[in-house]
Image (cartoon, rainbow, N blue to C red; front, side, top):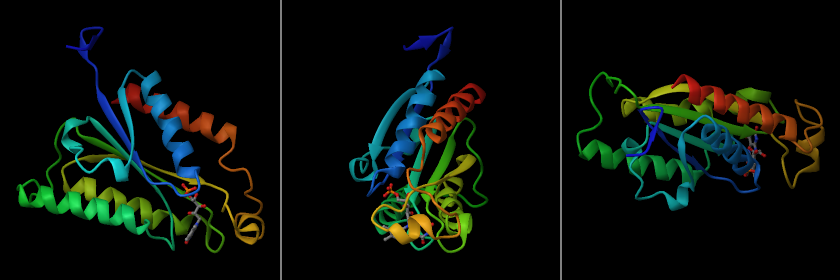
Length: 186
Ligand SMILES: Cc1cc2nc3c(=O)[nH]c(=O)nc-3n(C[C@H](O)[C@H](O)[C@H](O)COP(=O)(O)O)c2cc1C
């Protein structure tokens, strides 16, 4: 057995969907931080994760951009398919009892051109509900302001001002450190 100081090494999977690269950068920073914190990590696009069993991991991280304050359809379809499968297997229980040691981290990248972070929070809450219904504890929601690639207007004139180049190297470093800290707490 893989052991570290007599303890079983914990497993994390980082699932993400990304069209223009922002969410992918955040996902990779989370992976690096969790690995630095001692987790055995796997990074997967949701498109590659059909067969993946959430319950095989101690921590499931899931990230998506905000599209009209919703997750993009492929992410929604993925989570609904997983949820329906687990429901058929009887894993969705009344009162959603928490399963000790099963945790989820939600992250969302957004540009907030109209109303700021409120365009991202519904995505984080929505993603988190799938995991809470499956008995996971949602340990945190991370919202990362990011450039709206392909739209100069939305990247410079929106509610959040000039967001070109975000997430910055500094943002990604902070995310990596937060992930490392999270690993040490779990
Ligand atoms: C079709 C589309 C719709 C979007 N809708 C929103 C939105 O409603 N609110 C928001 O804050 N950002 C919106 N964005 C910006 C993205 O959420 C943001 O740029 C995100 O970081 C992109 O992630 P990605 O690079 O991983 O694909 C939208 C982007 C696209 C392409």
